[in-house]
Length: 318
Image (cartoon, rainbow, N blue to C red; front, side):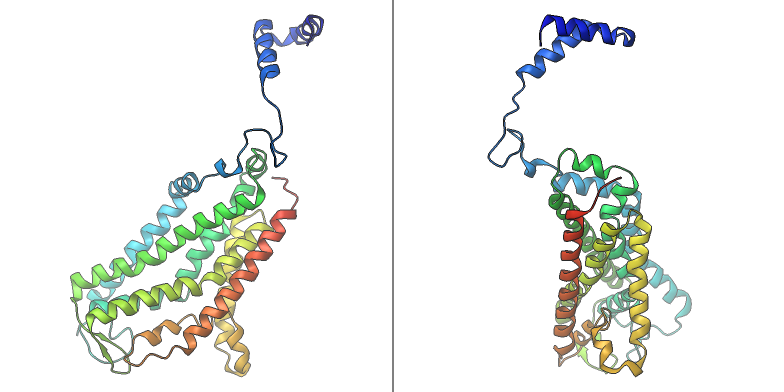
């Protein structure tokens, strides 16, 4: 830029009270800046892998009040169940009956009850909350367009946020049985896991069954994670994405109770939600769990691919 051009700029900006010396320094710095293009066509020195790092996103999500309340409630829930039994159970350590009756028989039975009562509504809601809030929250805050303008590639934004949401959901899903086991050991002690059919599983073997049950629940809720991610891409309202996923879960559970649907119920995403109960037995039937894993992975994969395709072509205005 010539001195005449600089003088003209100074004259134009005279009413803005801009320091001419500062303008000269900024102009010289801009002229010395490297603006070459790299092999991928991006600005020389730009590395997409350095944008939106997973650790940064995780710390950001952990500082949110939403995440803290969810994790806090998961920790408090076993204590609420113990309080309910202490206030209402007159004959603890029963050895027969359903899951509620057997909850105080041992720590493993208490964990089974916690997973059983939370599996219908709470656990799908937790997964929906984390995944439905991924993209929609950024859009609602009007920060998504600025995030992409950094620039962060769209596929990286979706992937990093999905991974962060998955890790937080996994933490919540694992935290529930772990805390329930500790609370159960303190109140009801170690002992055999008693099934409603009368099977007794040794304490060590019951811990393996609980771990496998937790792993199954995590995989089975992949459909909720995929659907939450898809709805988060389709809407700018986080509540709509979370609520839509929870609504589908409730509707699926209602339809699953209609026996007139016959074999059509097998295609509902929540049909195999409680297949992990088969692990609390001496003779394990893997049929329902295998079908549940296949169904959840299929639903989750389809929803995730649809979300990725939609986000790649979506017009970002917020």
